[in-house]
Image 1 (cartoon, helix red, strand yellow):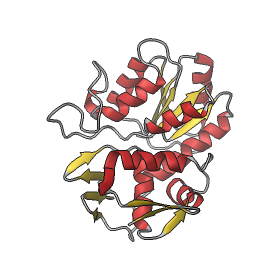
Image 2: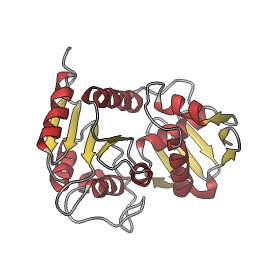
Image 3: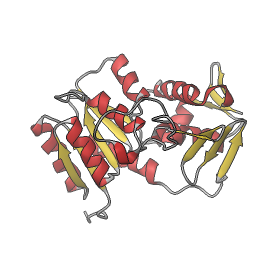
Length: 253
């Protein structure tokens, strides 16, 4: 297979060197440039310096930052301030800051298969949650699926900017604002919102939303839609006209 462009860098944050090396080997076979870290602080430093296309992070990391903490840091901190002391939580960061958090796609690796842990991972902004043991080939397929979704050009049918009440959705900039203030959305949260915008006024089932926003090749439970809907409602509040259609799914507008 031909090598992809040099900017297709992935960061793997995993303290088990056997797993980290296995994942890196399979990803490099597909032409990716893979950088590895064995703890949260080193991983965040790599993300800050290299600006990767995707981050794969293990939940059970040693030291002060576990995998969930890394996800929180990535989703709460401006991209240029990932390493160092933790920033206050919330979409706007420190008082007076309008910088959105980094939206680099995240894949969580975990030996924990409880629903509570999976839901927490998605609520923290993960784009996928893979439990151990896993197939390395399947993991690579999931990576490709995430990158296809997040790297696909915007369709010509989607208006560049849509306003819904106090919510402004700028598809070209991949930016969402509430009453003029930027709101940090995870990659999948934005894709879900954008697909709902594309189908404004239509009642869509969870499977339609998964296929449209995540792609037909996405592996996972339809309930992940409910998790991301809750996150959109939490972040955008009553300004977002997103209704539950009982027995069907959800409708925007």
